[in-house]
Length: 375
Image (tube, rainbow, N blue to C red):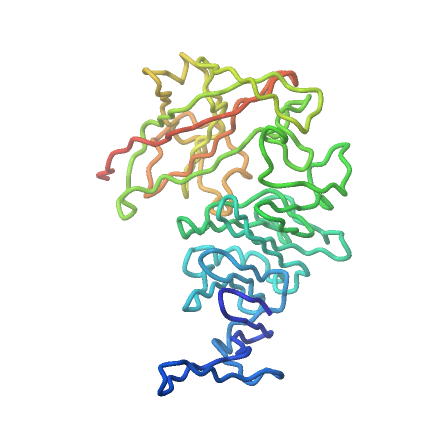
């Protein structure tokens, strides 16, 4: 059960409804005073809102600003109730995540938390048994691949997936805590750590997640961004150039990797993007390093680069799943422009050469220029 607003809601495996607790009615008498009629004791009434959408995982039920959210494993859905009941997974286009693994309805762990600081609701699905994840998939489309999905209530859309897969969420005021029982990338880091999210950045270093921090001595774990350009989605376009408006701020690292040094300087000569890749359903540019005055230019404050041409010989059968997993062979004869109804852009931030500096990347605007394809 969950109290939300002025109502008490309940969940069953295949149903969801509201309970009446101490219901009262106001009656006007002849003296213009109000008489209150009510009942107490045993709950005397319940109303089913749905006998189809239910919940078997009490830790996936969470109250947000825009309604109540929960994960329904039987229907493979993420539901929201706010005056009306909605299947967000279906309406917002993430239903496919629940179809990647047929065994997802038998996964043991369905968790949710409300991120009050960012007005987000976070959902984690994983197959934990007694604190250990069972045969987790490593690449994006592996079977039994756990995931953490973020829904932003401000824009009313799913915005991202997160790399952390905690075993528990602990909400506290405007922050929340997670643990690091499972971490596919941990190298010399203990597993049983507790991390605080949304902590003051003067205390917690940026790009420091579960002990894997960007300012690593080996230069590991740069920030990675993937976005989709899909203007005029009914028309096929030729994509020509990419423009970026942003900057890089540098600070000297403190000895303690969990703190951030406040004094920063701006490096105006450093582009916030180190390497970039573009792809669509049938084409892929491969990973291209951006080198100033070679394939990267700067006009006033705007960084610009030409969107590379296709770099694969032929479409692969599984490329629609994840083009990055296919071996790419540079093409010599058929270097056509990237053209499709959409274009996916994937880039990494600057790779550090040492562990003595901490980088912060600010990208104010990023976009692509295109023209209509008349083929």
